[in-house]
Length: 466
Image (tube, rainbow, N blue to C red):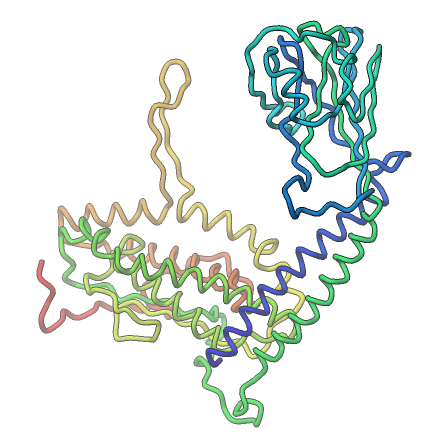
């Protein structure tokens, strides 16, 4: 793929993601309008238990288009607030301009409700002071208010301005405790939901058209000319080849500093990893619409995996060589090699489920290989005081490092096992990255070579300084 097509494919994916968000949002609004409203058409919040030892509970300022130039359409929404005293006292609930509420309660002890999450998650800001001069019902600035025994309800046509909601005991006494709910009713809810869904559908169609254009076969391929592909896959083999030739003269101590030496590679791979994820998303939609993995993206992603395997083989996934990895996506003369056979056709249905649902069993196993072993000790009280963790691969590589340190030998059987574990991990990675439809086998194919043969990398003419 040419750079222009790759950019177009990335733009198509971004548009597609926006389209999905609009479709989900529009569908949620339609669903809320048709199934979640009460008999009066309100969508209600959970019930919150609010209390204070002060004289009032107030909301943070509700700012609705109050600045010059702001615009608020009339009759866009109605809100409803309900407060029920938990001890059968007379309760007051009202809403008024924030400035007037501050003037009335500014010197009174009260709590401002700053957060309403799940019913148990309520945040307060306590304001110290004395008691209000008069009961709340004596004030004339309320735009909506109600007081009395039992549940008190107010309904308010939302208007521009800064507003505060106030809940108090009707006699302005301390220790306010109520069950509180809020509701909203929007006349445009259904129309807004349908509009978002339609707009999302149109964006999705545009994204699909752009993606099909960006990922269509190149002219030579369309005219029937041969396109380079990976070598034929031997019977019974998985279409990902991962190999490593164990150096015969590994340093006793270099593994102690490789974590520093690989930092430049880690930095580059971090950026390549972001590109890998974004381009895999492009490939997802391309496969979904065309049944093909764009060849340019495929080659790039294989290059990222190849680079990653070289760095892993050099460092703490194998420690199989002391030769520094090259900075390239292309195949190179290096003891670690990786390739994936290009698929001419992929299933449009499998692309929806294989990377998450079908791969779950392998994810559990790969998690054990890479980071799933944990040991811990506890004190007499049962609190954890020490925790160590690591995967099977990390543990085996550490044993190999100790063997190198004390014997200058890398046990061949241990190396073969480590290679088998890494081979399993990268097969699952290729499957999850949508590169192949063949399900990864549940088996350890041991050894440095795919065919099971052994090979030791010959020392370089000018060996690295140790």
